[in-house]
Image 1 (cartoon, rainbow, N blue to C red):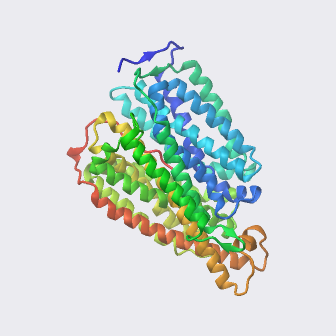
Image 2: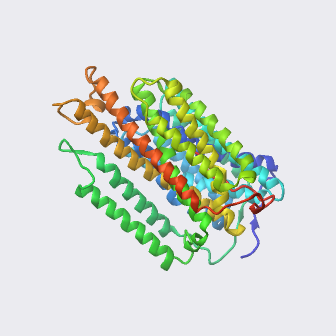
Image 3: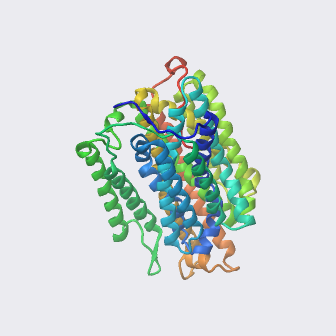
Length: 513
């Protein structure tokens, strides 16, 4: 492998390069959280079903997760500037498509393309930082990148509520357009090209397509469990559900065989999973990713559909949770050297379990304070606590040359866990909601979706809200069980002490919600 090749462009101060990378990452992370508050409005305008609306999130997350590792390698092979511009262009164009979507299919396709653009763009921003900064400046630059990414996740719910309430939900996508154009222009003018020259370098396109197709089919099958056909819920034993789940599993098995036996440069070298701390961290991240990703989804619908909040008010209601994540992350980074990785993971997972159990006790007439916000803040604080120790555990036993791969796998675990967790929990919540509705409305005809979501009446309003809240209770209670399982999985993480950490090593970032 030869030295990097640098193409001549206008000289740019390091601060400008850092700004370009950070603003682009802010845009990608912002798009994950900004959509949440607008989901009920999008559902009404485009006619999504109660279970189908999750595809606005999952279409983005699945393609983002499936191509994230591929995007990271593309920056090395084809050049950080070229890949950055391609990712920015694709993400911006997909944002325009999502903003103008007139149907469910158009929205889902646009969001999938957005996820692909994000998977190309996000790793390129980190590559730009790592190849620009060195020595003691590198940890500071990565810290700024992580802080801006965290700010994007925190600002998303508030900004989403403001844009949806004051303008229209379409502006949560249109806001990406000026940001994307701006960073693309700056990058084309000032960002120098840098690539790794290697004649044998190949991107594992087949691996990315297999894992994405497998996850998508699996999630589609799970989501179909709560679908209505001929007035009846399909259920787990339906031929349609089984078919899609089997297809998904076949694709995932094919992905494993491809990576182990066929791929010359596998997307995921499975030898890395010999590291116990990495496997444990990925397992914990997979579990908590499913619980936390679903929390925002269910709280969005609870605040707006049950408590009657506007999108703007819901956005402000999420603000304390965003601040709790930031506070948890700051405290965790200061405690890790004194208390060790495993103890902090125990603490974070334990707090999350308590918080989710508290959320499972809400009812249709709960007050925002303390019934909703207190357990939600506990969950959010736990989320912030968990980021740093899990990133540390994932890279503790890995060679520094593969720390980027380990970090990418950890981020992928969170995205996959989030997508599968949302599909499973939303499906179980929808089934619980429908069962509760028919149980409380003896003799009621028609499905819950038809009576409450599409054609609600004043007479049924109370019953619909009670049924929907019951579904949320079930989802939050299961989430408590998931985070309790994550706490048990933390026992697999080897004990670490202050001396185990590499002094002066840059932090390995985890892309936050």
